[in-house]
Amino acid sequence: MVFDQNTLLYGGLSFVAATAVLFYSVLLIWSPPPIPERESEKKYRSKSSPSKPVPLPSIRDAASVDLTVVIPAFNETSRMPSMLESTINHLSQPHIKKSRKYEILIVDDGSSDGTSELALKLAVTKYGESDIRVVKLEKNLGKGGAVRHGMMHGRGKRLLMVDADGASRFEDLESLWKSMDTLSPDDTKPAITIGSRAHLVKTEAVVKRSLLRNILMYGLHTVLRVVGVGHIRDTQCGFKLFNRPAAVRLFPAQHLTTWIFDVELLLLAKQMGIPVAEVPIEWHEVPGSKLNVMLDSLQMLRDLLIMRGNQMLGRWKPTAWRT
Ligand SMILES: *[C@@H]1O[C@H](CO)[C@@H](O)[C@H](O)[C@H]1NC(C)=O
Image 1 (cartoon, rainbow, N blue to C red):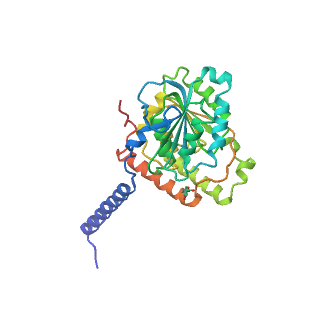
Image 2 (cartoon, protein in one colour; image 1 turned 45 degrees about the vertical axis):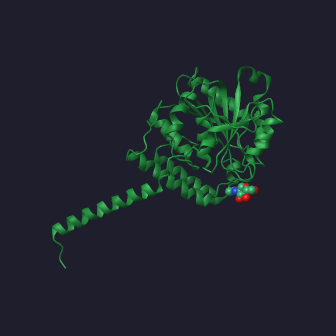
Image 3 (cartoon, protein in one colour; image 1 turned 135 degrees about the horizontal axis):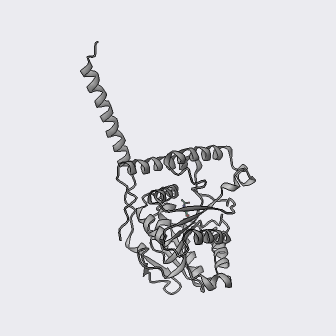
């Protein structure tokens, strides 16, 4: 059989078109739906109103405290209490308390082990002096969704996200704080300071990781370079401080609710021209991680591709910020 030029040309074009349609369909199918916010999730409970939920403020309102600590918590009844204790111990030291009014916003990410009930109980009894608010998401969104929810409803001039497992040392907030003072002294310009564990590489903490984990980490770093956040040495650290002008621009534009949401935030920051400083912090692995290394790595890869694809096609825009 002989192919003439026209047959080849049309064949080639159809192939390209079919591939484009296929990629586009996969992108549409895999793209996460807009992040939902249900009526009950726009309200919080606290010591002053433990049984009747009260409406939450918005990140677009003016700040009314100095610091919001956002703690995403999914089935964290066993790890959260000690983490909460070190958080409050640090923040209630007289010299810190004097100059920094804080709130703690615990976002229960649809737990079924009584996380929000325990958080509320601690807020009412043991930590009655502290300003703790508890929000419960009706369905599990993923860590990125829980952090975003807290950030969208925080009152702080500065907002910290911190993992409920206590893997970071809360005192290291002071390093992030100082770095923020340098980047944006009066918090009028958007800025972000993030904890980094890059200096711990090659120390015992990392060597003790399994070979598989190290290979996957290496793969992730390569992918991150391709995606455009290769300038950040540790994108995944769960200890990040945003000032309010940064938070109000970033979080409304966030689409990913899964583990890799940090990368989306850092990429958005780069696209919006928001400076990011990396600050070395202490870290220790806490048992009970809900990360399934193999499965979650594949999901991360998929989400990164979706994010990039949507951005390139203009479906997700870094300027999605509305007043
Ligand atoms: C959360 O905790 C509940 C109660 O202990 C358990 O039934 C459920 O399987 C847990 N979910 C996950 C994803 O760990």
